Length: 152
Length: 152
Length: 152
Length: 152
Image (cartoon, rainbow over all chains, first blue to last red; front, top):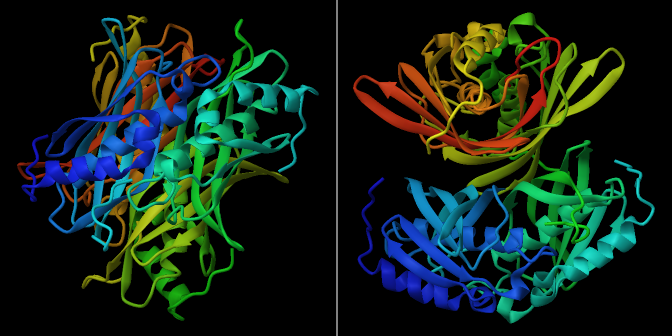
């Protein structure tokens, strides 16, 4: 699907908003590509992001997926919007065993109020790229409050 | 629903497994009550767990919910089991604005292979207790590998 | 949870709307209890509602659950509203093997725009009552169009 | 994704199983394309499949999506298998307003026990084709009982 942004400043706004999400700094997530309707969030492996087998924890996988989807939706909203997750659902398809997660949010419906995204998380291990999670997310557009753009 | 544990050591195993989930230490989550079919995980507020409005990030809410559900399911499994999340879905009902999250996983179906849990997250602000998220989770039981009990 | 209806005519409106959902007549579903924030839909067994094992088809289980939830949400909306399903998720917990399904929708969050419901489907077989499905649903409130109240 | 069937008789088995799902005859659904990992189910409009606005009911949309996904998963299973829906989640993206629904199930993970499918429903209105629902589904493989192949 090809989408067009309605706010030409979308990329800058997203990068600023992401920088304000302190949990992203805590886990070491970085914003990847930011395109209209499609955003990636990357997360290098760290030992303190794991469950008891030493793989990325399912909650961490969900966190970067939710974040990628939130910003994908936000990229298409008109100026003055903020965005909140209404719900997300994620299927864990394979162990998140590797050096890096790449989460992609892709808008499949951009409505006036509600936006729906596909979520995908791949794990990179050496030259291998494995789809380790797939999900869906519903977002709601709100008028921006005094504290600036919102996602998540 | 009242469930009976099949492994009398369930509480000790859960506390040991939780201690090996390093991401729980990273975010500061602690295991609360551990009962057959019902487990709570608590998370005190920290500034580095927030999204851009200063509330707990939706991904963090999902992480503690997934963890509580995983251990609730694990509490009913026979000795020698490990557990993995197959999928979870979470609805964010209210801003997670407060001093502490309390996530509860409650088993609604305990099958030989698959377990289904209700997930609930409350946020405590002063004397107020608000349901901020509600979800469902599907877990799969596996035979325990060499690395010990699994959840998440 | 105890909810209060904002439209005193809610029960009549729901019964009228249900009567206009032709698919309910096709499958033989009937509206059960209609209370503020809680509605049940019942479905007697018929051979033509089955999958290949002779049990109620999973899609039929989802249909009555979605309908019960839609009307539960609608019961709390202000006059002049209509309601649409945004999404629903359902876990099939046990074979829907019996003489009658009872689907219950229960509101857990009633917002200005979005409502979230718990969904539950029980199957009755003789004196036995088995929880055969459990789900969650997100609804959106719309201003009523010219064709009257909406659910589903 | 390109998948390979492990049972060369998959198409015949699916067509036979579909023919035994009496609810498909009730609503008038027909099996479309049957490929390894990908199955479509089509449903012509009928007045008795509608909600109160005269569009296809959300439950009917979910029913054909669940059916398409169940058979997509079944197409990849080894001989002697049967399949059951564990859970499905569906987002309604646009009113299902048209002459025909085309539901597609596409396998994204085919495991020994669990299979995960993407679900998509399009509605055809004249020359227009609109994505009206998108979902995800988890299936479980069972050893076939005495009553033959299972899906749904």
